[in-house]
Length: 254
Length: 199
Image (tube, rainbow over all chains, first blue to last red):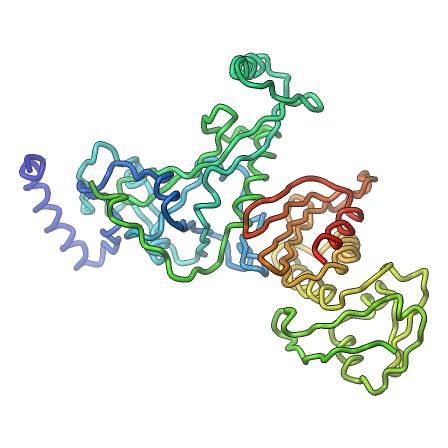
């Protein structure tokens, strides 16, 4: 109750301004996707995926013919390896609808939503763009999450060798083939709400320790990302989707 | 005489699926006989519509005045069964992709045409339900094939593969979109093994 009172002046000001901006045609952002204080700060994606079928959505800025192949699967060329670690996705089944994909969130609007803070749309009217030419790609999140991916890393780096030895001190040793450690990583979907989109997700590629990897441009990471594109993303993508299963409120309401 | 199943007339503007057209030719049957099929004009028409003269040459057959004839046994690329439906599906998707690439980037290089011809040679023995051909910017041709019972096979073959004496192909195999196997294998051995598995 206290935070509501504390923010009451700001709330009233925001209601007035957002109505004014809407009347002037300056604001057309869907407020339904903005985080609310009654929402959980993070959705437990793992628990959600364990309980039901979940689809996620991503915008492709390329034309549909360059995004999908003849079978309605995303083309390998439509995703670049460097895009895969921390790739942006949106959770479907809540308030995010496929038609919201045209809103590209930029600036402060794309900053992380933390501490269940109030978000006032009137303060973010310049934090989004409306795109006209884009294409929607759907993915089956259940088959994107917790998928193990074998990958290799050169044994040249002393630092990495030490880290691998340390990690595998109590577990069976990794195999070294053609001068490369044969390791196993995995991909996971995590909730990453932003100020203007509570339903924003991030796709993490993890190394053998479970830490998210960054794209460095190294051959081994490039190969790892290409494997994820081919073996996980292409196979589980769709150009259209039948009814989207709704997400029960207990997964996101406090 | 070749046994000819019923052939439905396909629409040229839409992808050719198994429902649209369904027939196979056993190349061994063709090899031994020069078959008069004047009563099967539809069959000949259908073949001529689906395949280009180059395709006929690749398969090693020709049609002269409604006769299907094996041109030269040694020229025939197909040792066993040719699945004309799979051949036509692969061709359709490739030609569509060919046009996309030409429109967007540049004329398609001869090496791509050569690689596709090689890929088609092996893959058209499989009972394909649907397929998609992609020409990728990293100098690869990717072919996605779907089979009965939600089985999906993705194959990636390098273009300009002169140094690849082992004729390797990268494959990923899925059932109900779940990855079952992913590896690199000899293309010929893989397709022959896969045909035995899927048949």
